[in-house]
Image (cartoon, rainbow, N blue to C red):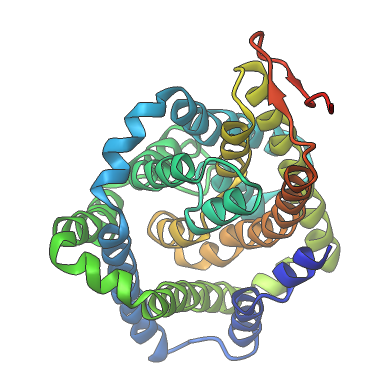
Length: 340
C-alpha cells in the first residue's frame, strides 16, 4: 500500500497533472502555439536521440538467448493488447477521440524504466526485462504506426497514415534514435554518468508534448465536450483493461511453463504501455485538436499501471523474502515449495 501511495504522489505524476491544469487554464494559443510546436518537435528529437544512446548493443544481442520469453512479451504487447482494445471499443461505452485514444494506447510498446524497476522489486529476471522492454520500445517506433494504419485508418476513424506522417516518424523518431545508438560508443559513458540530467530531459520533453497537445485540445473545446461522468467512466474502463491484461499475462506465463522469474517479466513488461513513446507518436498521427483527448486514456492508464504494479511487485517481493515464491514443475504448473 505504501508503494501505491508513493506511485500516486511521485513527482512526475504530479507534474503531469499540473501540466494538464496549466494547459486547461493557460493554453498556448495564437502566436505562442507555433512556438510551442517547434519546441515540442525539438524535445521529441532529443528524447529519442537519448533513448537510442541509452540502448546497449549487448542488450540487443543478449535478447536472442531467451527468445520464447521475448516473443511472448511482444505477442502480448502487439497482438493480445490490441485485441483487447478492439473488444473494449466495440462496446457502446466510449465514443469519439476517447475511444480512439483507448484503442491507440493498446497499440503502443511497453515501458522501459518502470518495467525493469518493478521486475527488480519482484525478484524477477532483470536481464530479460531489460531485453524485452528495449526490444518492445525499439520495434514500437515502426510497429505502432503500422498497427494504427491497419486498425484505425478506416472510414470514420480518427487517425490516418499519410506520406507526411511516415516522413515525420522517420525524421523525428526513427532517425534520432538510430543516430543516438550509432553514437553510443562516444556518448554511452556520458549518458551513464549523467542519468539525472537525461531523466530531466526525458520527462521535460514529455511534459512539453503534453502541454502543447492539451493546449490545442482545450482551444478546440475539449472540456466543453468532456463531462465528469465521462472521466469517471474512462477511469473505470482503464482499470478493467489493466485487470484483464494482468490476468491474461499471468495465465500465459503458467501456460507456457515459464519459471517464476520469467513469468514476472511477462507480467510487468507485457502489461505496460509507454507514455514516453505514445505521446509523441499521437502528436504525429492525430489532428492537433484531437491529440489531447486521444492521449488522455494513455495518461490515466499510465498512472493506474504504476499504482497497481507497485502493489503487485511488493507482494511478489514479500513472498520471495518469506520463502513462499512459486516454482515450476516439469509439467509447467506453478506450485509452492514444500517446507521441511
